[in-house]
Length: 594
Image (cartoon, rainbow, N blue to C red; front, side):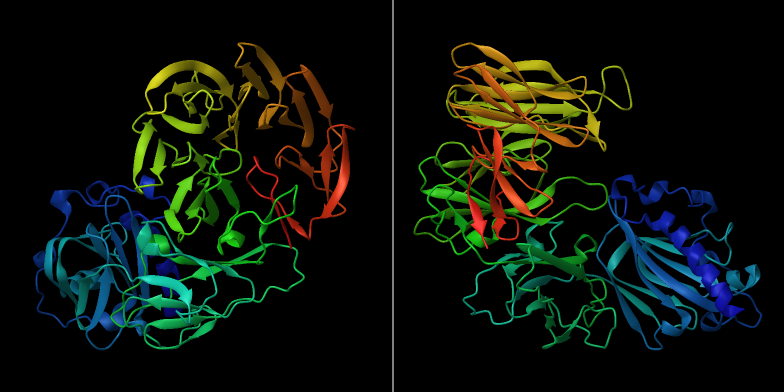
């Protein structure tokens, strides 16, 4: 009977605590403590000290207890972080660590009558909290929640005959991924969580290297724990992490693995920050980027194999390498990118260790503005990074408005920015769109020089507005828009000429433009030659199409890659997918040969 009630109590209490502590799966919807719907009105909240003593035999907390659940919250985050059954509650004074400064709660599940619960709560003592009250004891008398605010750095809670609990405020447990031998010459890219609130520990390393180490900032509890990832303790601060060994014949260039850090606890019970509970290891087959014409290596850094895009400065003296190192939780879109500046004769410089964006230009999150500045954008702002002094400035922002940035492209010939902004406020108040997209023209310093409202009416695919790419070329600018849900591109020549083309722009130079459209899942390739006013249409690609420089590449069910030949308007077999990795960046035809 006791085990049955325990199961029911756990389920009920989790639901109650989720409301009281506002679980972090949906942090934006969290209600501040004073507004929680399950809290009793202020005048109905019994303070802990108000329980009268009764001259009858005491009720034992330990004998009546089924489970304790600990939660914490602030104005933006709330979660349960520790649950203990009655048998797991220590028999000596013990410590619980908190990270947040809002509300701390202890949910209690009893096997007791309503009267016995009242007598149990009368035995609770709290030292070091400014506001102490209970909730749920009217509607769910067997599952009261003790809630505390204005806690001191050390707060002591005594639950009847259980040992005192000291609640300590601490900074979250720090953790990094690194090589076991710090002097190893093996290259690798490492993201440390301290660099960003959302950053988790990430390592990008060559396939087949020795195991990695998780290094913690505090002395750790090394007790056996089956929930820890595969590995063993080296000492009180380091845990050797066993990595899978990808087969040498695996076709993927990158193999990603990861796990959870939730089971790790320090000797005093500290744990990693809630938003950094995971770690990720990306193993990469070590090969260089090659020039499509000469076959020679592109770049000069030992980090090159780890990058997914390489974008060179106009003078070729520098480039920015980027790699995906994370992804948002839940329904979030875009990726987190690591951006590295590479210059001849100088060590690599981290531009952004963990930058989230949905804005991709020509396949990369970065683009050059001259030889000394690099630009990139998130949902709200367009940033420019100065290569010489390492500073970052905000060039354009829609923060605080209903708009967000869909695309941004620097036009080096006109010396101006093209920025596309979109909003989910449909003009006819429709819940499903289409949604308006505006074009902003800015000078080099971000000053507005033109605005074209209602540039496009964008459909939404899986609740996301379509991309509206802009690709400048020497002879004109290509800007994509949507009409009746279909993509079109307007070409505006430097000579004042205009042309409307089918499809979304993928690549352009002075001789050609490459556009793509998908009809019922089938790719249609358009090749536009502006000097001839000639449009070629090809719908015979074997499978998916990737714009890779001036020569698009298509995959096939047979496992081969095909290159498009503009002269014959045909797809010619090129390489095996197992031996070649294509770049995400579309302005270059560089590739990797594995």
